Length: 414
Ligand code: DI6
Ligand code: FE
Image (cartoon, rainbow, N blue to C red):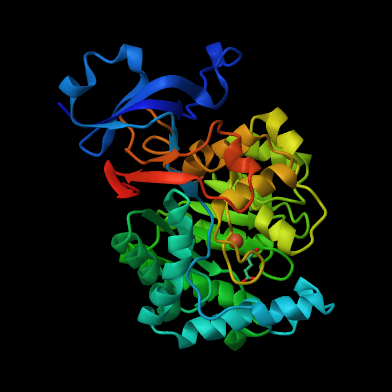
């Protein structure tokens, strides 16, 4: 007997088509008149109801009639800065009065302002501030998300942020992957001493890794942050500490961040508006996921498109994420990001959905266990009141999430 069985559903399994049947595979890996079974927190069956080995009531302890709902994998938001102190509404206003993002950063505003606020906040305060943002994401079917540090910029405050991120994952029905982003910005006490700060980040790494609080290491590779040579030093130390890396790359200029990430076998390179053909090739070669962040593109009035067509041609997996952060992407809606991925970056709705399921999971190194509806994977999925999966990217400001199942438990909706 299975624990639970959903019948009367349409599945968007988002399973990757094998090379041999890529051409004939249905869009979204869709299965109509389908059933989905859960046992012990994992998917036990995902396929046509006609293939069930018996009558539903004889197969599971609980049978749920989905009434034609679409079921997708639980959504994955693979790049967020959800934990931080304060907000940047004032900076938003400044920028609209003419200051550029780079000017704001140079004037000690921007990230540095958030660093001040984050350092001043207690763990409980940071938790309380992040919780409503987390709840926004969960309400739209997010079951896995990544949270970066990077507003503490000292061992004490980076660890504090990472503890808050872990606590969010323990207190809510969501898997949280944490990322140490010590190389995010130069803290004020290291003014004009970037190499010294890079040394300090490297010195933090053994303890960060030893604490078990970080699942990966990230950096911000940009003229207003850290140069490729500095990031390479941090990545070598991450490697030595046994942590995988990922990179904020080529967001504002082409510093060859994508190729650098690929060289270190990064899980992903993120942003990528200015990535050139060389970067695309390097990523394709290493299987690095391209994480596109249309929220930041939108907020910063960026006009340079990431090389989406080149990624497609090279077979680079494309993920989409909120980049939820107080400065460049104060976004807590992954469904809005699906829409932006389509309207701003011209992804197809299917590519966009793959970006927040299969490829989002891949960007977190979780592709074996998450991101698609396949027997054996974690039973993380969402029932939607929609008549076609393209609706998830099409509508703006509407949340059709009916029910969320996390590790086999119904955690939202009856
Ligand atoms: N790139 C971004 O878009 C954010 N961080 C980063 O490395 C911006 C973070 C902020 O402005 O607070
Ligand atoms: Fe970011």
